[in-house]
Image (cartoon, rainbow, N blue to C red; front, side, top):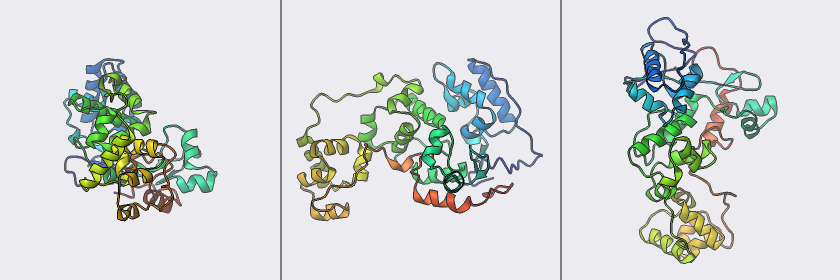
Length: 337
């Protein structure tokens, strides 16, 4: 048991339910039948099988795929609700290690293994094996807890990001009447980690909305033509400066349009700040050098705080943790338990 009371968290390599280990039993999937799928989920719940998304994706991939294939969109959380199963009561299975898709050996993290043994980068590996992961689920869950908890509209019910959890969360916000257009997300500063994960797992936010059964055209909020001008950018930056609000590049990237328009109209964010009359003390704090532009990403970046560790640009602490502990394959028992 973990510190969450009713939610059990255990490794698939070291299950301890107070009873002999039982293998996951195959569950026949009924195509398109919502209540039959709910009944099958209830069977798994009473068998005491883990029902978090990543565990079900390993044990019963057809069942999870059927839940997300229903039309209109249902998803996993809604299916559990229909089955009468509170998400806080389900068992949770997080694996300590991740298998290498090339050789099959399991490690806590794969970055160093891929470089030393196979001579490939994480980026090349993920392109070659779509859907693969670089770090074990427990390691990713620790990173998720640290980075995905700011500006939430509702609490998280999963322990780490997945493509399915992104869709579940989008659908749940939509059911609660939350505006899901990009403009509203950025202006209100809500759920930045969801937007980041959505654009990580899907080509665009529009594609993520469509996959969750939401018509992007119905939630899109268009600004009138000519809304953005150089004068408006300067005015908005001055308002932030006068209100003592953060004006760092990192803060403005989570605001979305203002940062991008500052670069568009002035060539660099540094120049936009100068035009807005930012004092030298602020530009020094931001690390700006007189006469030189900022080092910026070649493309507009989404908030980096919640990007999935599937990316090769995972934070240094995460990469170092995986590299330090993956020098030898994981023993048969769970290290985290």
